[in-house]
Amino acid sequence: MQTPLTFADFQYLEASSLFRSIEFEGLASFLNACEVTEIATATRLLEPGAENNAIFILLGGKLRVHLDGQELPAHTVLDPGDCVGEMSLIDGQPVSALVVAESDCRLLVIPHSVLWEMVERFDGIARNLLAILSGRVRHNNLSLVAAQARGLAFEKARSVDVLTGLHNRRWLESVVPRVLLRCEHDGHAVSLVLVNMDYLARCNAEHSPKTGDEALCMIGSRVADGLRAHDLMARYGGDEFAILLPRAEVDEALLIAERLRDSIATCDVPDGLRGIGRITVSCGVAAHVAGESMAELVARAAIALRQAKDNGRDRVEVCG
Image (cartoon, rainbow, N blue to C red):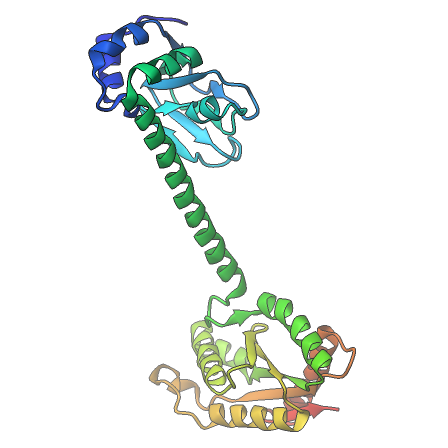
């Protein structure tokens, strides 16, 4: 639907970034020769892959710009005075973004031929076009950085245990196979220790799950503080932690596990945990053998852990 320019339209055009610092009286004849059109809410003004031979200046309403499909959040929202379509018009390539009317919109349609006539007549329009394009690039770069930051935060959330702040089982299972292969290739020993809190179920029943969580956090913190710089640790299950010890023969792994067990059994517990009595852990140790998978290594360490539980808890056992 074509309508004439109004006084309000000229106010938006005069404030438009495309005509910034341009003597507006000289533009009137060009602008009056352009079509003014109105589109309804949800109308697709531009679609990816389509040809475009005009630049559109929004005179009323709002437009949404989507880079990855309308089902995803808008990349940006355009207000009166903003323009769209300049990228495909300048580089001669098909439209790369989806532009949809968020509300009923009123637009000035400046054809390709009229735009270049204005550029030849007014040097400032070319500068303004460059400023608009550079602004688009800057906005896209900032959006890309923000998206990467969100991706990193999401990846971190996927690999971190919410309760203890340690790595979780998902992270460990993605890292351990590579470490096992590297150690086997380099001829280095590697061992695994499973650390399990004793009597967690009883603690939860007699006190509260919150108290049990606090005990697990304390155990996780003390174990992590007692490891070597290159050791890998994760919360592996509800009351269990897994520790991978690269370059550790079974005898050294046994000593490390025993030291960790003792550090927990003899530590001064926080005031909030004094009511539950002495906190202890049981540990199962297994040394990796050539060709063994992570699952097989964990299974053997779990056998040793079960032996430690059966033999009275608060002890370390080794799986041969």
